[in-house]
Length: 325
Image (tube, rainbow, N blue to C red; front, side, top):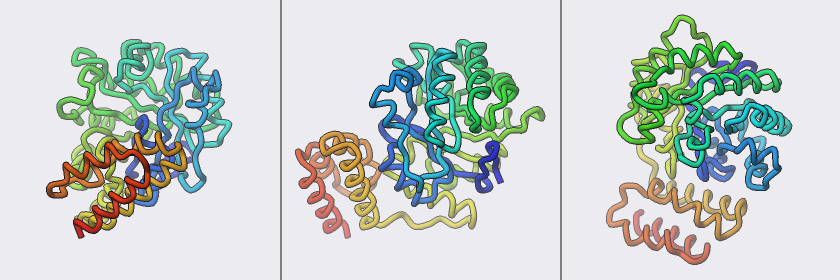
């Protein structure tokens, strides 16, 4: 079993990464049904929570069926992160996660997310403050370093552990890499194999198949994996990975009928959650994943991306099921 404080997960959990405009409640419900062992909210601004901004506070919402679930917060100020952690604690999630890995300019450029990899003392101070403030387990998600000259994650992980965090997820890239090139798991393995480390080490980066998940598990001895971009429009990856890890057998790809059903359910939930227009727009990120590999699909994809109302979208999904089955 893997333990984040009092939170106990299955052996070698497969975890859904927090992603902005992706890991909302409609998608999380589907990922949970497909076998995700732990999920996170979209990352939430500490300043937004303190100001009670609607966009931020709404991200705190989750259904009991989604448990175990963590709320991830980001920010650059110690006091703001401490206060935001208390706001997050008030809705009773299973853990609080600190985002020290987001590479986008609007976050890292303001000293939050991966920006804290340039200010390790501040990162440690924020972590200490949050750990002391909340009764919940606190975990961290971060990267190898800011750039190739500052890949100090082995030391950073030790220092974070000393603050009292209960687990750490490491994305195998620097901030300078963004999402380019291949993730380097050797330093994730170095953290795991550091004899001083005793908290769970979760690996993240480029896990896009059951085979890759097993390879990283066997090569680096990590305690679990987190899947990010490969799950977009592809929630069945959780089912496939977990089955392969348990049996060594690859499941067949989901049928077109199942893919359409999952997409339809996702779209329905998205519209209910966000309203028709926003729900339709934010679903556009998922269509390539749901219908990857379908022959001559581009014209239909264009129609999905340009549909003017939800009735058109549902009609298109019906047509896809008929045309490809």
